[in-house]
Length: 508
Image (cartoon, rainbow, N blue to C red; front, top):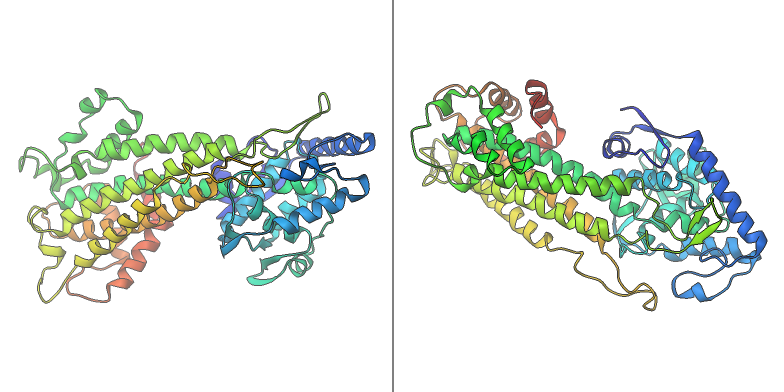
């Protein structure tokens, strides 16, 4: 995906990831420009008629009771941006900032916000040119949207703030000048249109969802290799079981495991060794499947939000109405992001339990202790489980829901907030921990398979070879951190999933 077009209605998660993470170019549709022009004309008409409209001829929040004269309306909008850029902490990654810019532009393309099309086109030009505003991560309540983060983003459009361009951090004006892009003084309604929205939480959340879906797919794959290493039983994946409890995710995961393990000589030889396996293997369809169900719900929420109008007030050209509502409230995202974080944490929880079985000689069905052939003098993979357990425990802290909290602001005018951006940021941290736990499990599973007799399934054998090209058999202790770094890079590269998708078209 090299280029996408935005029109306010058809942006997908995959398109957002293509732009934010992989550098796809963006263009604004002609229909969207025409809609924005008409909504801007409506704002000008409101001003000419002297109508009272929130955020156009009044202050903001508690100051909505204060009238603003026509001559001060532009100053009001520019003051809004410089007074709201109060975020603190480390900057968001560039991919998140690119996602925020794309999402804000797409929302404005719907044509209910009253902004000049030129500002929206310049926002997209910044994305295409690689002008990335410095946006600190902390400071959003998730209602009225992501005011503080978006204000930092908009500063650069005004020739203020800071940005990274060409790999260098510099002032916003210098970045825009270096990229050959104009800066602006905002007119009536435009500041509010640019920062009243849920685009920070949505950008973080969409990228986190994408990573969690890849982690869920990877979890099925790593489980299949762990099954071979542990000589697991296949009966728990019999489709007849899952047809009696037909959750779609459960049936999908059971099918994935059957596809991955089909033709495994190791498993065929081990089916009479015991009656049943521990839950970390036997209940994978139920656990991984429930995670898939959670991801389906989160995707539905994000897909709505990608193409939603979330500022306030909203302009309706059909009858000239200017309506103040609450579309900026992040509660739909907040609940979904907490759910997403919990789902990602559960992937790590069960993965770490499989890792424990791989390294523990009391549980590993005959594998050497800690997967080292020379135990005692060598520790092998002992501390891999230790590190994984640390991240699993951290995830449990991070998975506490942010959305159950609220705190009033703006003199109690904004008396219930979502904490959606906090929920999204936590979900992003959780899934990165989870990917690292999966890297440990996969590395240990491949090591365990090397102690077994018999051929692997065709697909798991290819995955084994892919891992072994990066990480050699762990015969005696060496600087294991280098292996861990390579495994973490591999699980984040999507090479494993692409291999499986190519070999097994029905894997999902």
